[in-house]
Image 1 (cartoon, rainbow, N blue to C red):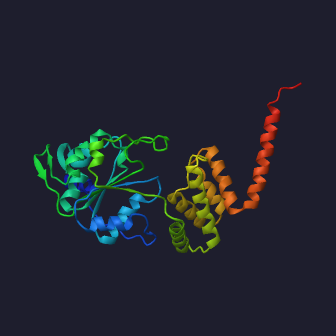
Image 2 (image 1 turned 90 degrees about the vertical axis):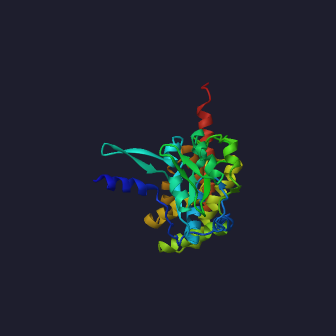
Length: 312
């Protein structure tokens, strides 16, 4: 592989591109508001916060697809630093070569810079301060001053509002610098889609997979929403997100067995949570079975209590 080929390969990692329109996507939440912001071409940084799996990143990509805007996506981690964001020297065939980072590429092309999972970042991403103000930035290592092209904007997604996670559900999220957060013009709180929206999502997905079963769709939607209600009440430690709902639907399309599909997609949870969610699924899909399961569980608990008694 030649030096130029290697350099081209590295340069394409963060190329700006217009995403493809996904026919399965259903618009909801702040979609139209963010469309208006990005179509305006004004510099107006946006922060989108919400629980995992509710379509934050997918929404931004589909907005860019709809309005024909280029996007550069950067997945932020605890190790992300100035070199990762703005660029740095890389060793190519024994020689150092300068490679532009994703922020520079987005600025030059007037693209949308998507900072995905921004709350995983540390103080190292404070180097973005001038960029978040819509100003240019000096690349100290090469002595270049980069001015953002018209249309450049920043959208950040996160599971938290930059204040950490008290429940410990999102390990690695940080308490972010107030000066950094203050530079975002607006914050959108993204909830899980409403029942009618998730119904459309599953109907589209099932139609593509050759499945027509309105009753099953209704049961899955009920399952997901009941899990969220139970989560908010503190009755269970996990929820069925929209993403996991899609996983279950795809598993059903493959295996043609809904109980197997649900079970496979719940395997990622620990045994206690999985058991609770499985019982919740049975109560949504077959209430009569749920009553039997509850009676059996009570009998088992009673027997366990008897075994713990000391012998006479």
